[in-house]
Every structure is written in structure tokens, then in C-alpha cells.
Image (cartoon, rainbow, N blue to C red; front, side):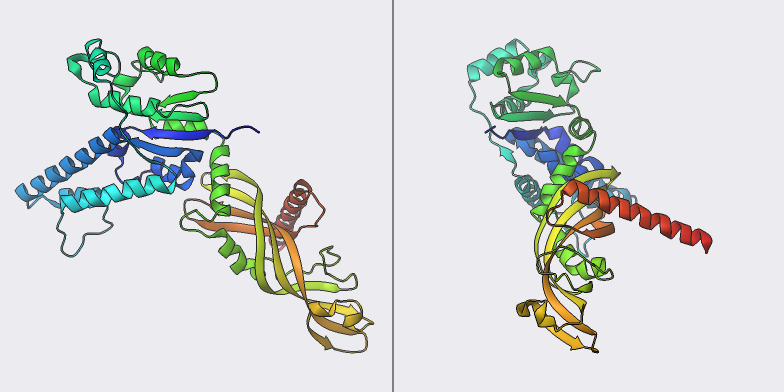
Length: 399
């Protein structure tokens, strides 16, 4: 059995400094799609460097605000963004210590949510560090600059292993990349290769967008991440199970289901119609695909206990329906008896889901025959949906 590969994305300080609260498009996309299956890691040195930038930026803005009271509106707006306020508090204290505590908790909590962490500093051989500095070995550069970058780089290398893939994301192209290139500096690459054996992987990215392009050019990674998040109910802002259970009656209650080979539906039952949902008992997402922009199409295999109304002809209900299933009966005349029965029903449900707005934009369902393949069921589902839309369009044109 193949060992599962652990994937890591290591974020340099400049990536955090560029978007402290991860509210920009790139971070928003990665948060919505579980970092494309990667565990987010931030080296301790990078975390402390970003934290210090946050402190200094807040101090500068507060100083400017005091010195320029009449023109402080711009600084106030910047402070709101820096403190991650949606609106100005009634009595803002702009306390920097509280800001840093709040940011610490946010970063650690966000990383932990995706099974990531702050990477501890590696054990250092100071003699080797001195030799690297003297030799100007990257990421060291002239003037002995590069100590922090070296620690960050060694922290990243420590993640590389026989069952891991590492992506290092930094906008510090001067020390880690060739000039005007997406290729890592030869010294950086050579050191990585020395630590690599066949099967070990490390990749370099100059931005989060470059990382996204590499791992999700066809949105297959984000589709898989979304699939996992929806099944495990770990997608913030949306509960798929709850939505399906709440809307089942609206989704399928208007249809009649003659000759549906579900367990417990009598052959003689005419026009079974869902009139109530007792319980959603299972759900899977056998297929998911990206449609456009933030829209993904989910194909959900669902099973639930439903209450169905149907008609039984020329017979007492108990002769063709297991008495334990009968919820009510109404002998309307000598020919028809209306019966309420309790049935375990299965459906294939197609949902178009907007990951940005966290809402369902459209849905369509068809009964799932127990022994049919998912592929065949989805093909029929799509065909029926297209035919229904064509009929609606033709009807609108004629009217």
C-alpha cells in the first residue's frame, strides 16, 4: 500500500507582511480551498519578523495620526485595516500590545485549522553558519545580510522527507531566485538537491498566485479540497448536510416517482410523492468539478428516510405494503386507497455551489437506482436537466 505524501506550503515573512489578516484574493482563495491540500507552515523567524513589521507599522500610523490631526482620516482607515476592524470602535484605544496578541492568536489558529503550525527554529551549527556567511552562500549576501533568511531556509529544508512535498513561497527574489527568473538561485537549488533523494520534492514560488497556478491550474486540487471539506463539514460558513436535509422536500417533493426500485416501495404503488422527510441518513460526493470562477458542481449520492404518499388500487393496503411501513391510509372509494408509507429513498443530487458567497446557486435531483453506476446516473441526470431547460426556453419563446 502506497504511503500517503504529506504536502507543505512554507510561507516567508514577506508573504504575511503583504496580507497580515489573509483577507486578499490569494489568501482568501487558499483558505476557501484548504490550501490546495497543503499544510501551511511559517518558520518561527518569519513569524517574528512579520510580527515586528506589524508593530512598527502600527506605531508609525499612530504617530502620523497624532502629528497630523486635521489630515488623519487616511491614517485612521489604514489603522482600521491594520487592526482588522470592519468599522471604528466607539472608543478605539489602538493598543499595539492587544493588536499583536490578537494577530498571534489569529495566525496560529488559522494555521492549526489546516493542520499547520509555526515551525520551531532548527538546531544550528554556528560554525557552519559563520562559514556560510563568510562564503556569502545564499541566502547570505554582501554585508553579512541573510542570517534570518538562512534560518528560514534551513527550517524549510527540515520539512523535506521521503514522504513529503514542500513548496517554499517567498517574494524575496533577490536572495532565493535568479534575477528576473522563476528559477531558484543555483546555490539554493544545489543545497536542496544535496538533501533530496528520489521521491523527495521541494518547489519554489515567488507568490501565492504562482503557487495556486502550479497546483490548481485546472482547479482539480481545489475541487478535491472542497469535496473533503463539505463531506467533513469543515467548510466555514456552509453546512452541506444541513442544507440538503432542510431543502429535500423542496428539491424532490414536487415530483412523482413511478416504478422506482427502492427497497420497500410496493410494485403496485401509483405515483409515490414525497410529502415529508424524517431523516437524512447518508451522503457522499462521488464527483465534483469546477465550472467557472468560484462555481463548483457537486454530484451528491444521498439516502434518507422519507414519507411518501401513493395510491394502491383494488386491494387493501396491508396486502401489498408491509404494515410497519404504513403511516396512514385513506380508503377514498372502492378502487383507490391513498397510503402514506415510510421508505428509504436514494437520489443523485446535482448542486452548483458558489465557494465565495457560500451558497447554492442551483440544484437538480433524480432518483438513484440502487444497482446503477454513478456514471450512468449522472449522465441521465444531466440529460434530463438539459431537456427540461430546453422545454422551458421553448415555452418562453412560444409565450
